[in-house]
Length: 167
Image (cartoon, rainbow, N blue to C red; front, side, top):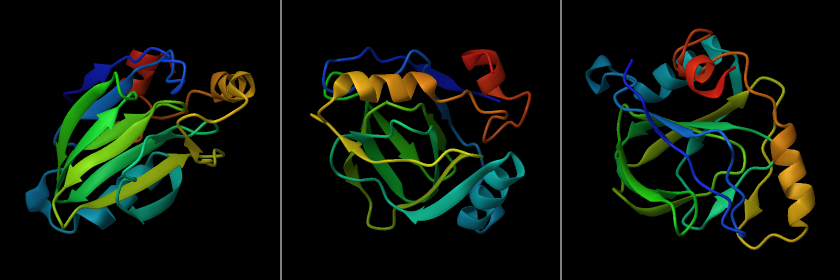
């Protein structure tokens, strides 16, 4: 399974994380039919739940209480990860992105048909933190306490999380 990883430093506003963001290009083949249901089933089979269907917020935000996986079920988008000093990545139908707790993300542009499936590791529930959130020390403490998931959302127990995050 091909993956790319990106590590983002704390920029003082967006905390980011000491483990890298993982991109799974073509995690699912778009020719295989109903991508949304397939992403939901894949994530659930690997112990990731609390799934939702929507898009990506057009402002910098992050989660201090959970890691998040995004499966691009339809369309394409340019997304900035890691805050203003981070990386802008193009994602398209079939791609998945594992965003560690604390890593900022913001939609820069998207096709009108963008559909994203999101999910979280079992037992984790995401809050919504925006850039400039107060009480940065407490936020960074929550991020540091978020456990490495038992399984990778795309590759399962032996997936990239075990290799890249040491889970």
